[in-house]
Length: 330
Image (cartoon, rainbow, N blue to C red):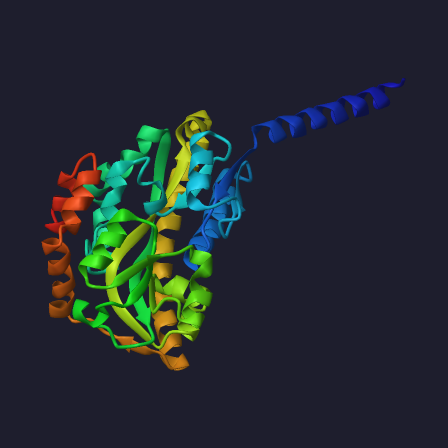
């Protein structure tokens, strides 16, 4: 073997070693993401930023549209380390982290800006970090949205308008008590059955954020869309704490910085899309029912007098957080 051949083989071997080392240092995080458009757009931005900031050594593998499993299953999988990251609303996991029951309380916030102020405050961060007790690290708080009521019978503005109305709700003790307190006939039902139940008249009404009313075509079978904004739900973006700790300091910093950018983008994108969806509903022929502050106070007072807030507190580990949120102490 001549000297040239030896040098060539040595160079090839060195190149192969470098490629092997590069492959070994590359990290891919599997992220169980949601179905709403703002969440998917923000997930794509997070992936892009992590790739750019790391020179390709940190990648995000997105499982959009809850394709990894429902919210609870995906969160449990992150806790067990079977998947790395998850984006989920609090309600399906509140029984594991009781302080998250706060987000089942009605009328915590009046606007998205109020909710963002809470999420970024010291008090809000303390509460949301309840997830750390299950081995999760909170990376960001995104917007899921305000839940609004739709029906075919009447332009609902106050609780008296829904007396006896069959309203589909989640299988959730707080939600059931809330809707009973407001005078309706709450009807728990699997989400996948709601559209056909509305079409067949099995239920009169349903309540969800605008994005879900749109993507699931509820607006096509419901005339009135009342902007009650009765419950606000964030989305919590979390990573398995051990997985985060195992990342290099550079990758940790990149992920945290990228998440900050993705969070700001997602929040503004969610607000933007809600405005477009509302216009779409108006153009379709739906009646959009605005709720005045005085009308909203009727819903809030009925929930207070009916013991809804006390029920929420009874489920929380630190019920004082609910008082702080309601009194805007954040």
